[in-house]
Image 1: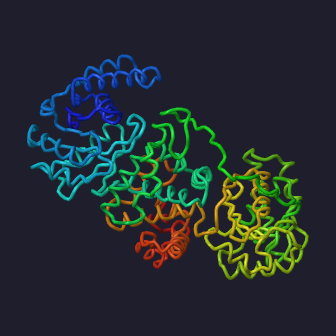
Image 2 (image 1 turned 120 degrees about the vertical axis):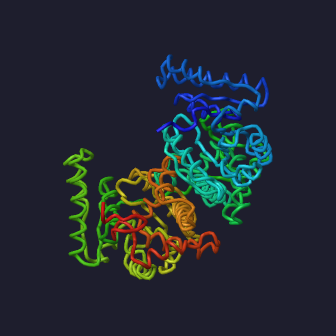
Image 3 (image 1 turned 135 degrees about the vertical axis):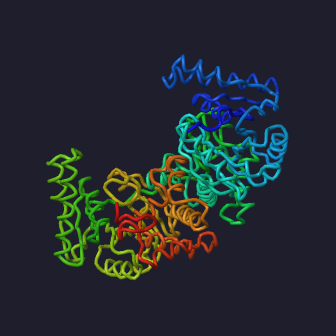
Length: 592
């Protein structure tokens, strides 16, 4: 089969355009580069020569391959040269009227069979195509930066794009060693459409002073395994760029979750655009630097209260989370009472703990002596009355408010005054647990992530009544057991779930609207954003029923229409398709 598009014109040779030109030439295609004027053309050629020289230095390209590549690239400022191309890729600035005018001119210059592709990340491909007399030959081809390392290419079809043209461009992407995904024409396409809504909510969370920028970023890196926190990523992308994409998304969707957070406009107006300006959400050593610098402490930020002494710990529960938390404390040298509803359940939970520790020994992560020492520190009990003298009790029972309130009322009558009572809830109000006691000032949220021994993150949730030294106690304890604590207030979802689950819900809506397939959406987020799992892979792992419950809690708390659970998610749960645990969710796992 003949390779598609042997000659390609690239109009606009900035960072992205130059990267596309190099990728095309490296595949053996002739590349016609077009810039706005002679000076810009010379700079573009210098950019291409410099980037390929760096590739040789880093061993990604041989000197011979570089010479052959450069021989295939010609750069000028005459747009009529594009008439010789089979495909024209536009990479000019994100301005709709500029792109429409360019496409109208290309339509006039190029033969009718030439395919015209826009590299827009946020603008309407349909409106760009409407400036031509060949909308069936116009589509979007969205490369990701840096082009030489990012494998994803989004091929964006309008309602008029010929399937043959789209498939040819997808075949071109595969020939470049890329992974093409097909998307319909809406702002942000797949990856940015899901990514920027999440980034926007993180910016709004920071603006509301719900959590610090450091804690928001750490929570998403450590809690979800993301390569960067959302605010650091906004600085990398550019605050102004993010705001432009969100404005385009909001113009199409009308969803308030896409309306740019005011802080983005304020930063952009002040010239604080992120790394490229040297300051955005963070401050950097210099414009373009990735190294952050410390900033002066906020006025009025005094020293934190000292925490209470913790010598003995009780953990209530016998499930996976409870035994994982017991393991964390015991390995750190704390005596732990493992309290369950019966002695038999407590003994079974300790046996489960022993098996977990044994696996760690088998994998070389724990010595036999440390295993034995940890097990010796754990005492199983079937009576909550044995918790009378512990300094901290961590509740890890079922995620049911009535069950938790009943337990906290029982603990209130047993545990000594001054002991800290912590709940591991991931979605219920901590204050509702606290008000079941006569000591709400001693109650705090301590949300571990599963599996607790492996996951470093703990969300420390203070209610309006939590005493300062109680919060300090849990923060200090997290450091002693080698966990990374992040602080937040007592509202639905805390940090991680409040940002994660709306993103997952958006992915379900995208599928529900037949905008893209499960596989293409998952591929886009893994390859385009570096996520460890695609949204549907993650939903099937978490459980669709659990995800639906969290979505409903978030919607009930914030009353934001965009947070309402996607009907498709509700239908799958009603049908008993809950993910891996039932063998079927968004994918069929029973056959794997």
